[in-house]
View (cartoon, helix red, strand yellow):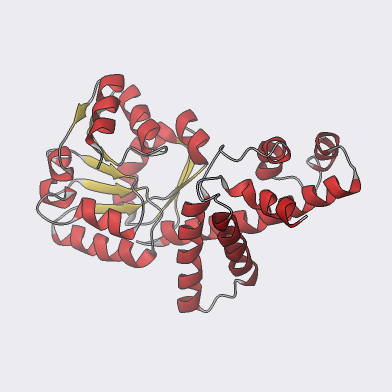
Length: 290
């Protein structure tokens, strides 16, 4: 069992850190809102720290799951940042979805301090985090990844190294690009079905068994039909992720016309007041259009 730190206790980080504690690791947590860290410590029996540096002190592994590039920099760098508290030879594992550029920047800073770095964004949403069945896409040196993988296993169904530093973040971009197109396609299909007078549940029972089937179809069609959009990843965060995808595509020359279009559809959802709705709320936009 290892001495660990976990930075960021949102809807993903809170249960992920809980799985680590349940596996017997000694876990110290940090959260920008200190009351949430105290609540986690009370529930799981770990420790809460006032700064990332304090949480990271003497930890073999430090995990982070925060909001964006700037949030990640803030918990890593500076006198109160995790890197200042970490020992040489320890490993930082970043589960945040951020740009590959900030990943490489922070990995370089970690290397200067003698700290290993794995970028390890996750897919599976809040339910995946709570049930410990996330998909984890990793980048970094093979030896560093090999050390971290058994720890990550506490909350993952599959964990794979896909290349050097930044490869995990690039893989997560692919994940989000695919989800954007899938959810828009599913929304249009269900919208068409409603207009055509079909029974959506009977329809999905049939077509989900064929080539049209997807996780989104199986897990979201009922809540979409019922107009309930509080079951997953928020639109605000999806737009953040798609912005990273589109900016990276500008750099590497990839063409993402559908992704760019769906990003604008999510902007429409935000204007409807749905910034905190889950990504399946593209369906609400179509219903509004009539």
